[in-house]
Structure formats: structure tokens, C-alpha cells
Image 1 (cartoon, rainbow, N blue to C red):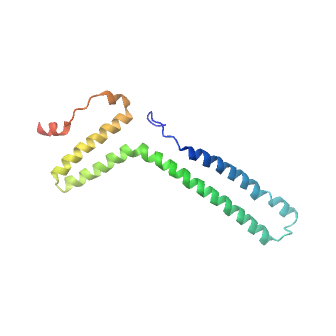
Image 2 (cartoon, one colour):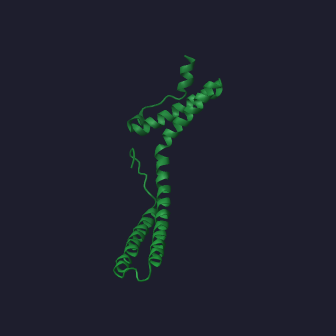
Length: 147
């Protein structure tokens, strides 16, 4: 939840989270259960066999962990991108505006000035929802330049 908007995770994440927790629980037991009997028997099946078994369990555990983490991070990135989109738009347009000023491209500069004002207003409306009701004059920049 950010600035009055809910950026919920997909339902699939809830399912995958449940599967992941089951996976963690299963492998927490599966990885630790053979340790005590092996130590008590002084590794009757041999250290190499014990080591192989642990490695297989750890690899399977790690694979499940990485798969879940990758899915979770994709969900998180989607939300992060939506939340920061207004800032990204503002920064990107400002960078383009600087380049247009440097290149003395007046027509592009004027278009980008209009865009940057729209992005500033959009960001302000998100940060301060009470400003949404404040009327914005169309063509504010061209009117200001004409004065």
C-alpha cells in the first residue's frame, strides 16, 4: 500500500509461498535427520556416502529456494516499477530536456518542458492527493513564454 493505492501481490505468490514454506520444512527435516544416526554409527556407511547425501539434499533445497526467490523478486519488481514510475518519468524527461537544451533544439525543448510539467503535476498529485482537485491551466508553459 502506497499513497492510497494498493499494490498487492498476485494470488500465485500466495500459492508459491505456501509451497516454498512446505519445501523449507521438508528439507529442514530431510537435511538434518540423517546427521545424528551417521555420527552415532561413526559413519558406518562411509564419510563419502554421508557427504554425497548431504550435498544432494542441499542442492535440492537450494534449487527450490532460488526458484521461489526468483518468482518473488519478479513480483516485487513489478510493484517497485509501478510505485516509482512517476519519478522515473520525471527523471527521464529531465535528462532529455537537458540534452535538448545542450543541442539547442528549441522545438524539442518546448515539448519536453510541457511533458516535464505534466510529470511534475502527476507526481505532486500522487504525493499530495489534495492537489488533484486544484485546476491546472492547459498550455501553461506556452502562455508563460508568451508573456
